[in-house]
Length: 168
Length: 460
Image (cartoon, rainbow over all chains, first blue to last red; front, side, top):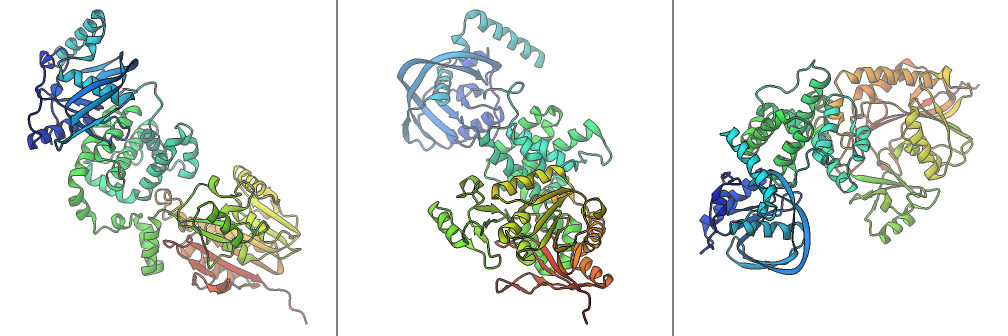
């Protein structure tokens, strides 16, 4: 297992649209294992392959407090079950240190392949529903800051750019 | 998606609180029994179980974990004579590392969660400087687990998870039975309750437990005692608040049985807190002429009062040092005295595993001097023809058989009258004086009892 580097906003590679996974093979399973290690170390509750510069439709999530319920979503599709808006203070490993209230539908149905390539679907609510939508956005090249006003987004961008310059 | 950060304003997480408790034990500033209730206040009730498991589990194996930590660190975290903030910071980081090792090796918490949460707890406690050290040490432990354990397996302190002095004393005193006791010390303690025979019979109470779905077996040794193979909270015990039963170890329940107070007798319970044996004496014999119960700790006497009130009985409580008889004794002699002496508590390590960290070899001698002083003093308050039950929850002969044998040799009117059997079954191991019980896996705690008889004046 290896910890991977997480791309940070405004890195243009985060805007890449990911390709569907053709076959769930050992290569994908290694990617999944590495993504879990990267996510747990961050610490995060979800990670999309896009964030580690792999442009395939793979998402890992673990929203449990004890971090013992890892979930894998390959080629995930989401369908809104209840459009009623649901607010949550989201943060993102690619936008470190910033938390903003984002409104999304509160209940969705997700269908995806698991790490053995089998189809499954579930109807999450709460944090898991928020998280899966957040991660699927990543696969489509979208970030949670896109939901914010341009003013807020630009302020976050300049702060992160400054941090990147200082690190370099 | 990032985990919601909550570094500053959110309450501390369980592992940070556990580290603060454990650090105080490492610095000899308190016991788990005293520190945990206050610490629980800082956490929601659903975290109390984890807090207890982390604190008790880690202290139970502390000698082993400390050796392991020594192998992982290049230099010790604490200097023996550092003080104040520096000592506290060092102790908290050591506590975090011990907690981390415990979670890695002895719990089902996944490794990454154990490491991540421990590092996070270090940040919460303001020890950001130590996060790399903690992360690195725990990851090394995870990788080198087998090699390290192999290297340490020949060290008795590691294999027994007892400090060396204690391991050696127990081996020396009790041989293979000492080894069995050491093993029992590392297991979670069994749960025993005492049925209040003044309210109902043991059989009838067992029926109630059965209705409540709580399994219980009757002790062959202690007549009021039930063993609960699956421990439950006291709130689940039928009639607990009404005093129908109490939680008390099987061995501890022998005290009142051995003293066997009779109707009309004047009885003294010296060093009575927390009052379990006081209550048992009153349940066994409600017709005593008087029961005086002493303790030198006023706060703990409050606990005795609470216990008495729950059972619905009364005793004359006095806050005094038992050895200083001029300060409390009115000169009227007692028919029977229970001396449950302050001791090293080396027989109840499974219930108080912090004894492994708090007790020192040199404490035993000091305790023995104190015990002898109290015994000599209380002997004077006993009627000729009366009896004194000397009891400790220690397994050190210096505090027990050796001390009582010397007392008998020095005291003309004292003789050993300890019965070989109780309730028709034998108990403990015969000693030069009195009998010793060692802790065992499903049996009672380690206890020592000697029933001493004071000679009546010769009648012609």
